[in-house]
Length: 273
Image (cartoon, rainbow, N blue to C red; front, side):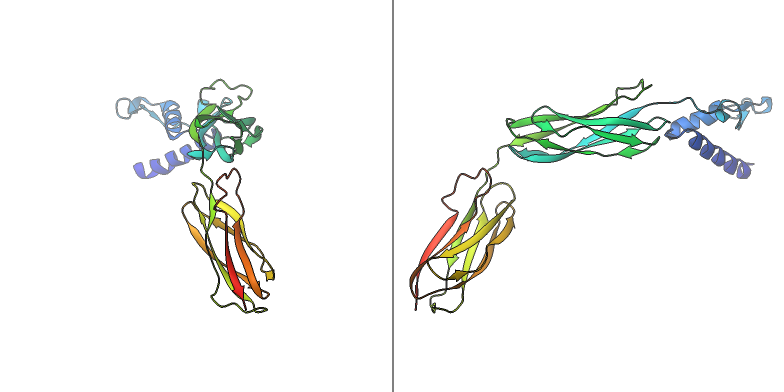
């Protein structure tokens, strides 16, 4: 009855999958159905007209299959001109034999890091990453092609490449000191707080240093800040002044390729009593 047929067929499926790693569900089903033992009493009563058979071709070692493939390529949607990004090439071994092969990335603009050697068991996957540099590349759409080098004995090479598209964009990079203030009354020799507000006026996330300086007196160390586009941060520094009229300034260090440097520094004049 079906109560005994079910575990027998389930066991046969497991044996088939073990003998042929990487087989799809459809391939396993077809293999089981095509290897039945013809039985006259079942003719016209079952799909195959036969009984489950673990001998014959099913019981023989499978023919070796060599087939490596690129399943997809992952990259950022856009990359700033003159910068670098990580691109991942996803590969798999669709054959039933272990395979060692080279995986490479080829961009239509810019350069990529060297090919990577990958070793995969049958049915296994890997996702090597590459560095894509856009230095010297013109802005625009770029095709990124991942390639799995064909292995010996491979005949199906149609799936050995995969592609994705990214864009090289010109970014606006601009950090600024937007506010600088000190207490209205400052006493010589007494540490006082200097407040500084900095902002990222550009279009990419920036990390940069901020420091203050004074005509005379000790100031606290520079601080580092990371700001997303359109955001700002309030910082506090300490200054131990000497008496007289003093000039205090705050400076946001220029970021790479920044050209609008006029807003990177603010100054104020204070009287120290």
